[in-house]
Length: 177
Ligand code: SF4
Image (cartoon, rainbow, N blue to C red; front, side):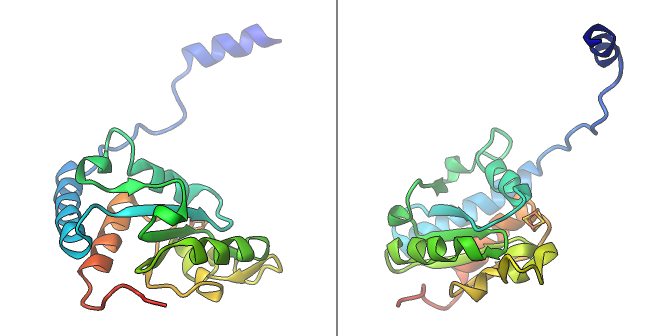
């Protein structure tokens, strides 16, 4: 019967915990530094193409959070783009699934130089919970040349920002191939 369930759902308390507040000051400080560094290194804002190589979507929730009203990273010029042809960074989440290997290589080939590859999340770092599965090669590094590893399951938006900032602030020039 639907009605008793509906009434129970309406009168019972939510089972989920209330969301914690975003660390606004930390995010604002990191976002400002990222915008300034991107302008100094690239002469413009940073463009990111997110590639899901087989994740459970937990990492995508955190990556997407960078664009929501709490973090709103576009105010600092951080942009997620729809095509690798417009990207500076390939932000790859999930283990390197065998079925995604060719798509990953094609995405890299389409990304103009200079470019960076970032492996975000424990699965992207070394296969994570999927390590040893017949369906994966391992971490993203098994398929693509990785410039930065951001561990975490999943990494928080602030950790993703810190990683991108470290990438841009690194002494080494972006990868040229
Ligand atoms: S690191 Fe964790 S959240 Fe991200 S894809 Fe792997 S299991 Fe999912």
